[in-house]
Length: 200
Image (cartoon, rainbow, N blue to C red):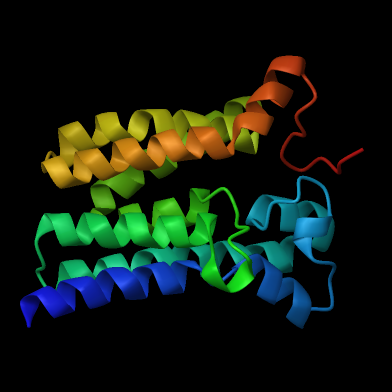
């Protein structure tokens, strides 16, 4: 029975992570599909640039919750750290490769944060603070995400040193950098859009 619960939690995490909040929100609000505009990323930043603050806020909340809910449930059930970490990775992968949307997903920043919040509020707070400080200093959402992703495994070692938690932070960090490779090129070229700027 325990094994079935563990597997069910991880599968449910992937399926919930596969819900493309940005796409659904834009459809319900009569906005263009975010995958067809700007960066093509179905995430809160792209929705903000092309659909406005309300749609972006709903997208952000939905993306955070789909990471937090399954991981929080696993933690609440006092499941082993490996299962909690597995649920976190599954929700994150669901956002990156959603089964309902042709495996074409977003970059995973908000869902990764929600998963971290489900694992440890201290870890999530450290990552959020890093994102915020970088965003205020440089006004690049992508740079803020990359900085937070790079430091997340370090924070995990200090705050939540369970090997499963540190391992999943490393995997998620690598995948976040991979998903942001186009942003990295734009940052190096000086063509990345800043927070609050309308794309050219």
